[in-house]
Image (cartoon, rainbow, N blue to C red; front, side, top):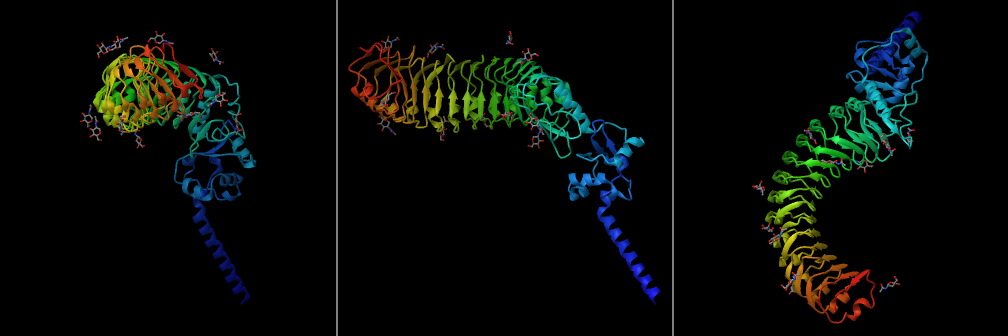
Length: 514
Ligand SMILES: *[C@@H]1O[C@H](CO)[C@@H](O)[C@H](O)[C@H]1NC(C)=O
Ligand SMILES: *[C@@H]1O[C@H](CO)[C@@H](O)[C@H](O)[C@H]1NC(C)=O
Ligand SMILES: *[C@@H]1O[C@H](CO)[C@@H](O)[C@H](O)[C@H]1NC(C)=O
Ligand SMILES: *[C@@H]1O[C@H](CO)[C@@H](O)[C@H](O)[C@H]1NC(C)=O
Ligand SMILES: *[C@@H]1O[C@H](CO)[C@@H](O)[C@H](O)[C@H]1NC(C)=O
Ligand SMILES: *[C@@H]1O[C@H](CO)[C@@H](O)[C@H](O)[C@H]1NC(C)=O
Ligand SMILES: *[C@@H]1O[C@H](CO)[C@@H](O)[C@H](O)[C@H]1NC(C)=O
Ligand SMILES: *[C@@H]1O[C@H](CO)[C@@H](O)[C@H](O)[C@H]1NC(C)=O
Ligand SMILES: *[C@@H]1O[C@H](CO)[C@@H](O)[C@H](O)[C@H]1NC(C)=O
Ligand SMILES: *[C@@H]1O[C@H](CO)[C@@H](O)[C@H](O)[C@H]1NC(C)=O
Ligand SMILES: *[C@@H]1O[C@H](CO)[C@@H](O)[C@H](O)[C@H]1NC(C)=O
């Protein structure tokens, strides 16, 4: 009886053990790891190659300390989810070099094989470091390989994805002096590269175009030169392209029009020549286009009118010719339109009356751009800054003075004639009104309604043909600190007492006032 019951108990225990082992192996089976498949890199890093591990069972995996290291790194659920089913590489960090690993190392069973993706990344990053000659702040000092080093975690400016692939290098403003290594093209998953405000010289390596995932490229404010490679058009994921303040020369490659995901392009402050590619009309996501301070010529392509997301268009300080295309009136998202200091001709297109969001319009220093300052601009109800100085405008439509959004109006050195109407006093947001300097020849009296412009800080009426007295209403403007009235030979009468007596003018000029 005792023997029977004891054998039943034994059988039960055996059953329980078997069951629990079965259950255990069911839950944990995916976690099985064969340490003979770990790979130890020359750098001392230990990696596993799951696709080689497939099918290999290791009976007593729980005794392997390597697994404990693994579980420290990855939560158990993550392991179950990822290890058995993917062909991704995983990397062990901070693993103790216990006996097992040593054995593996000396047993010669190490997996030889092709290099893993992160070995390539590390080699690429080390080449990047190598091509930097001067690192005065020693920011790359921790770009070294070793036991406690992980390029994804301890290297300044480097970021990786969950698969341990380098996705981001961010090293702006660190006084780095050197070239950009062609080996950067080996970073297959790089999506963000920011090397702005350093002293990088040389050219953009063509190999960079192998980084197909690149979505942000910021190399602005460096000493880079040469031509912009047409291969930039291969970066189809490109979202932000900032190359300003370098010495790039030659043409803007039309192939950039293929980067359909671009939202922001800044090629300003370079030495680029040729014309603006019409293919930019294909960049339908574009919100910002900065091309100012180059040597661009030719006319503004009408195709830019297709960019209905465009908020900022800056083309000033180039040699652009021809009329302003009326199609720009279709860029109804425009907030900043800066076309100053070119050789544009003709008039402001009537379609600009559709720019309901525009805040800043700079068309100054286009000597042959003119005609009347058109009334339809009063449709632009957000317009605050209207710079039309040094053009050829002949008159100002009355509607302009009804624009209470206007803060700054510059029309110096134009061809204005006639009288300044009383309606000027309706433009009550004005802080800065400049109608002065040669060529303008406004006549009649200075309207006393200027006294309504309570925010006025600067009033420049220099060198016109105003006559009569200086309205005493100007004396009641609390902000006015610059009042420039000289070289108006017909201006006379007493200086209003309340003007100069109790207020501090930084500039108050009365030359030729009789
Ligand atoms: C690497 O070096 C940079 C710059 O000296 C430092 O800010 C950063 O903390 C270092 N990173 C680590 C993980 O030590
Ligand atoms: C690059 O880094 C600088 C400095 O942090 C930053 O101002 C700039 O916005 C960055 N560029 C991009 C494209 O994110
Ligand atoms: C950077 O390097 C270039 C060429 O290697 C050199 O001419 C220049 O003087 C260096 N600039 C600085 C700020 O060290
Ligand atoms: C543009 O970005 C969207 C997501 O924002 C993506 O689905 C699409 O593939 C990208 N297009 C190109 C040409 O890269
Ligand atoms: C800029 O380009 C012009 C030719 O378009 C060239 O003559 C000039 O030397 C260049 N300037 C600089 C600073 O590279
Ligand atoms: C503006 O867009 C409309 C609708 O797409 C089009 O019919 C019109 O021709 C465009 N205007 C100009 C001046 O390009
Ligand atoms: C001005 O705005 C009105 C109403 O929004 C519109 O009907 C008219 O066409 C606009 N004028 C111009 C010149 O765009
Ligand atoms: C300025 O406009 C007047 C006529 O309005 C014209 O005769 C003159 O040629 C224009 N000047 C320039 C530089 O275009
Ligand atoms: C605009 O100015 C004129 C002349 O000063 C005045 O008669 C008129 O009432 C003003 N209109 C508005 C809307 O302020
Ligand atoms: C300014 O206009 C007045 C009146 O039309 C004219 O007599 C005068 O000669 C003009 N002055 C200049 C400098 O053109
Ligand atoms: C004028 O300036 C002086 C010294 O800068 C200052 O003490 C004084 O308050 C100012 N007066 C007015 C009315 O702003």
